[in-house]
Length: 375
Image (cartoon, rainbow, N blue to C red; front, side, top):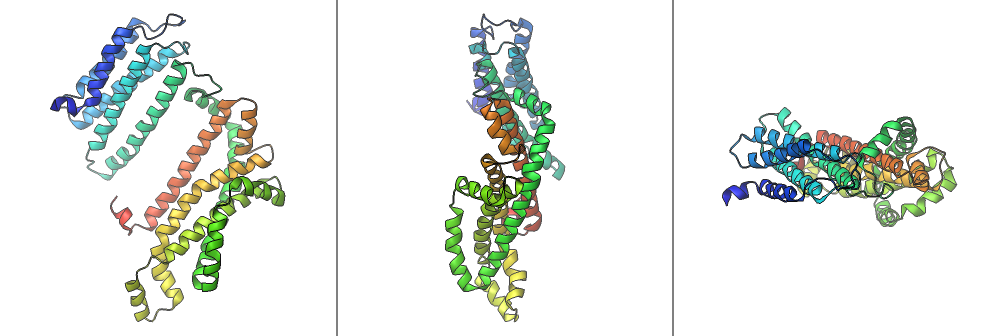
């Protein structure tokens, strides 16, 4: 029983292999390019070998390597076998895909148990584990859409989206330049800076603080779908109107978070600053602003995603014939769903990189904070 509990993923993978053996062949009789017995045997041996290895007292790093090769090798052969036979996968195909996924799951679990003996090893593990997890999302997506013959218009496979990205790099680059490097970056910087400055003024002036907070809470609840058309009417169809939408969306989260952060310094620390005869600005710069930095960076991270969403949605309401939002709204009308997904994929990558840069800046700036000292 302890051996079974040691790797339940391996036990289930072996069981799925046995079920798949009883359901062979991998593809239905209508398949034009059936998978040969040799390839099928290799897939079964990879999965069974990886599953059996998970029960053995193998060093952790070696076991992770074996599981990685077994899981991804079997998945690669399975997806390669469905090429040209979309929609004709049999039950054995999906059983073996599930078994490969379980080995991938076990591989991630083993990697998570490794104790890194240096910063380089720790960095590699931090990148490798989410990379494998993300790869399996794409593998399962590819296997299900192609194996089950999901209509292209409903959900294209990742391979088709990747091919579209490769064939549309000039278009995607122009869209990114219009949406990201013009509207998003300008609106993000101006909106966050304005929110921060107004928060300082509101903290200094009691009347302003009592008046601006209720308005900020009200304005932050405004739907973007109502703000975007107004900004397009005010500032025109080019990137300036999209930047205005981004400013509106990023201003209030920064304002509210900064005001809350300026109240984070403890009473004892404030009394100590007063005992040193510090004035308002000295206390603000040396005590209250450093204490507010986690709140400020929290707003910056929230705004990194809000800015991208705001600019893309704003482009639905009028834009030149370029931009990520324009491309999405145009191509979905033409039923070019692979291009729509290509834009979504590019936006997701850029948003993740944007968020990651802000998170790295936060870690470098607020290294003293307990949430960062633990890492």
